[in-house]
View 1 (cartoon, rainbow, N blue to C red):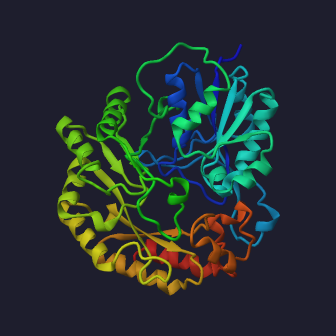
View 2: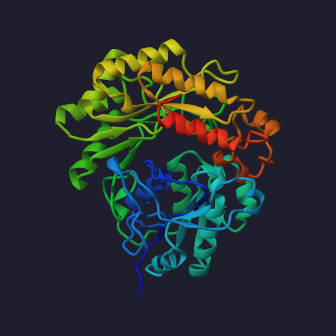
View 3: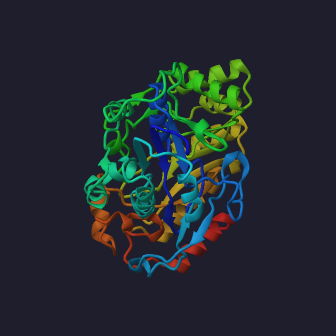
Length: 436
C-alpha cells in the first residue's frame, strides 16, 4: 500500500535551454500546503526537480548558500525554436524515477500543480499527463505565475484542470477545502510554507510583503498582486527562528519585490530581532532591492544581520522605457554598502538585456557604470510578460507570436528580430571577466 495523502503538491519538470536553482522554490504551492496541513489535511510533496534524489544517475553540483544545478537530460527542442543555437533539456528526475515516486502514493483527493514561469508550460503539461495516468480520478488544480498571467492559454491547454488565478492564499484554500474533508485531525500552529516536506532543506524562502508599490514597465508584480500587502514583522521573525532552530537552516532568500520599502517598520524590525537572538544566518536577495532605499544605516544593518548576496535593480541607464533608479542614487547606494563592509562581489546590479530596440552598446555602458561604482553587473535577459506596459511594444518588435507563452522565454531574446548571438556571448564573456 502506498502513502495515504489528501493533497499531493507537485513541482513539475522544466523544459528549457537553461534552468538553475538560484533559490528557486514553489513558494505559493508550499504555502498552500502549509495552510491545508494546518486544517488537518494529509499533504505530501512530489518534487520532480529534487536535486537531492538519491537515485539520480548523476548528483547535480551544488554551491555555497544552498544554490546549485538540477539534473538535466537533453531532449529535442521544439521545431519552432530551431533558430536558437542552444541545447534544450528536461530538468528534473528522469521519467522512470518520476513514475517510481508517484507509485509511493495512494490516489489523493486533490493534486495541486504549479507553473512558475509562463514559458515553462511544456514541463507542466508533461508532468500532468504522467500524473493523470497514475491518478485518473484525482481532482486537479493548477496555480502559479503561468496560469495567472495567461489564464486563457492555461484553460485551453488544461481543459480538465481547475485553473487558480486568485492572488490570495487564503481564498485558494477556501476553495480547496470545499473539495473534500481532511483525513487527519486539526493541527495547531504553523501555516508557513511546508519546506519540511522536501528531502533536504538547503534554504528557506521568505516574504515580508506581497506586491510592489511601484510599477516598472517590464515587471508583472502589479498584475499578479494588484494590492501591496505588508506582513507582520514578528511573524517573519518567528518563521526565521523556527526554521533555524528546528531544522538548522542557515540560508534565507527574500522573494519580496520591494524588500526595503518602509524599512524601519518592516525588515528593519526583523533584522533587529535576528541580532538580538544572535542568529548566525545568511540572507540573500535574488529579487532586486531598490537602491534608493539604501541609506548608511540600512547598509550597516544589512551587513550586521548576515546579508551576503545583494542584488540591486539598475535595469538600464538612460532608458526610454524605465529608469528604476537615478545614476547618482545607485552610485550612493553602492558607496554605502561598500562602506558597511560588503565586497564588490556581493553587490550585483541587474541589467536588462534584450529590450525592444535596445543596442548592445547601451548594455555595455551600463556594465561599465556598475564596475565604476564598485559593484558587478548581472545580465538579465528580458522576458516579455503579458499585462505589463512593455509587452505590446515587445509584440511589435518580436520575431515570434508572443501570444504563445513558449515564445516569452528570455533565452530566445524574443523581442529582437535577429539576435546577434555571437556578439551576445562575447559581451557576456567580457562582463564576466570584467573587461568591458
